[in-house]
Image: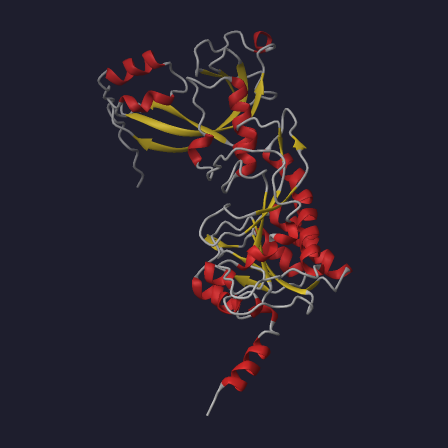
Length: 416
């Protein structure tokens, strides 16, 4: 008894299923015709305001041109709980658009989503590496919209580092999703150069790049859906990543015309918001606030009156403004030492409720100051004074070397 006739019919049957056309097992043995077309089923991975613009653009495309997108669902990271459950911003938008919402955190989550049989994955500011097994289950793999001109500023915070590095221009890149690494896929399309203004901030740059990236993604999805010869494969070939089928389609736009060098844009941690008064001129402090967000923070070293113990107090600094030209009119005794601050006089507090600080390059700034917490420190630890705020290094070191004073504690009043 021979199984050859049944095996041939088995192959012909499975060759008609779109989501299996790009799987590695079939590509090793068969070549497929792309004459069979249908609107795309898309799973959209997103989180923040930048990804919301792209989601709305695809939903608009789905409504206006039903032949391009058949189904558009959304996947987000697991919602964090801080006092109450806090959803990522895109979740509320997905519900308002009546889109199916999924949580994609564990491999089990991705396996459940994969069972919905999508054609392509779209990731915009998702913040998590999508498993290779999931991408291989997609007919066309996955694409990612990145807010920089790759390979420059590869990483999770490209817009912040674009501003911090004082780049004169930036743009948006559409790339394939790599199976193992972030931002190592093939470049499919890039936007035109976007000029940065002199006082560009993260928020203003987000407003610029979000709609440009959304339009770029919509053009790519339209091109993928309408392509007549997307999968042209020679018999016996093997493709590890289904997204590589997209390369011939974007051959004319896949090469970067801007010759950017690779640079990494790591996640912004809290240390990037710390003001270093001993080496930061005013322009760096202002750029730090525009790139990494406010409030910035610094430390105040003070001695507790009760027992003379040294304490560091972290304070938030916000609303920074240069008042160097008008400081003589505002204060009779302005700060003279780098990092020294002076509070506003009683008459000025209605108009200048914060503090005045002298920066490394001699400017005087006005800012608001809000205490965060107290931390007990060792009395003779010189590291406390690396980022002094109201004392210079020499005076701080002298204060640390002096023995603490002991103040008698007052008896507590008791009531019957």
